[in-house]
Amino acid sequence: MLSWVCKSLGHDAGPVTAADIIASFYHYYAQFDWTNDMVYDAIFHKKKPRYYRSAREPMVVLGYHAPNSNIAHTATVPGLQLLVKAFKTAEKQLCEPGMTWEAFFGAPSAPEPESQLPHGAAEFLRNYNNFVKVDIQFWGRTLAKGKSLVGWVESRCISLVIGKPHIPNTCCAIVLLTLIDIHKAIPKSEVQIWPARFVDSNSFDVGEGKEYQGCYLIALSKSEKAVSAHSVDDKQLAKQALEKVLDRFLTQLRTDEKNFDANTSWIDASLVRSSDVKGLRLDDREWGVYAMDMDSDSDDEEDVDEDLEDADETKPQRTIPQRPKPTSAPLSRTKLRPASNVLNRLRWDPSLDPSDYIIGYEDRFLGAKETGLEKWKTEQTDEEFIPQHRILYFKKKGGEYGTGEVVWERATRIDKIFGSGLGSGE
Image (cartoon, rainbow, N blue to C red; front, side, top):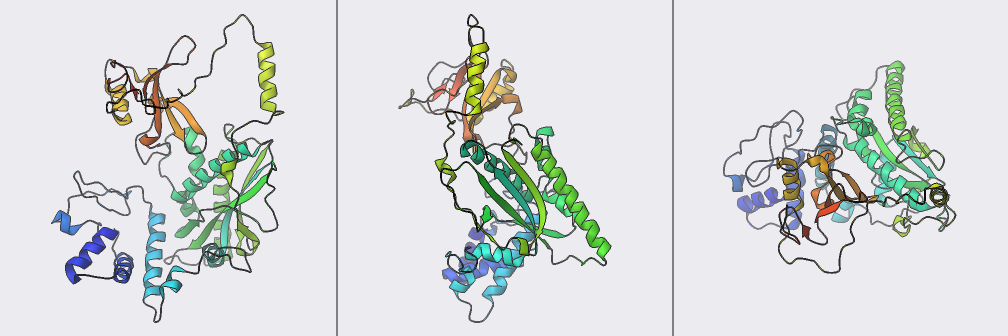
């Protein structure tokens, strides 16, 4: 988007300043007809590219090379509305007499004295009257599990705002509270989440404590084209519809036994007014210091000890599959075939059965995880999509103890599928 503006200015006006580029960028896209036009480099393409947009593509930004693809295909209508609003607001500010760059970009990130909030967060709370408040509370034995809980809820809140019109399976029912659901409850509404957690201003970081309480805020407002409710009954119906969406969202969260434990955590989502969030500050807790180590007196260790005592000593123990430890140096100097090539061969080679293979990957919040190759999603619009650069290894099921055989691994450069790494391939 910026590249085309720069090229257009250089072609039409010659050398320009950085101020000219910024002002032209906001002016061009504030007036852009996203419904009917596409963003593309007219100098590179020479003529308008042939691209057939679907009804699910509110904005189209084309890349440079064939086949023409929309790099903004995951954009949603509500997201585009917020983007256009930001463009128009910026253009209006730049047109004001006496506008300076300091005023345009806002005050420095120093907290405002009366609110203990950075300028941007303070403006966020002041500019909206209604919020969805997603509360998180954890009181387990170790905050390492609390870190996992917070990361999981955060990913659900993001899904809430981005919205996905298609829910592939029951496991993804948790994303039912999408922006689409909110728009059904409140037509022509605007939704925006602040990308950080808030905590009560009176609370303090307990350091080595085992409790945590914070929240995410999702602002609600009417769009510029919205018509005000004509009666109190209309407003009440809209509120009830939104509360049903929140109840459905909470039900999905609280019934997820894998990520939510009612004995050590609590989650809630409610509608609040701006007066209810005045006493909040941004959460400055550093979650990276909490490793996934168990306390010596944790219930998990007691359960393991009991299981070992009850186990039959004569029966061989089945080891838990683990990711192979990478060596300090690559085992092969030849170029390793990428994970995408291995994935495609395991899927489409008639001599191989995809159900026999497992993919190990890096989860953003939970670390190394495994899943069956048949369950792996490659469509970027899918809720369960994971980028292929997070793939760590491929394993073939089986083995004496069920640990499986590593047939490709990025860290050790093992490749028994194509033979590009250690081994002759299969």
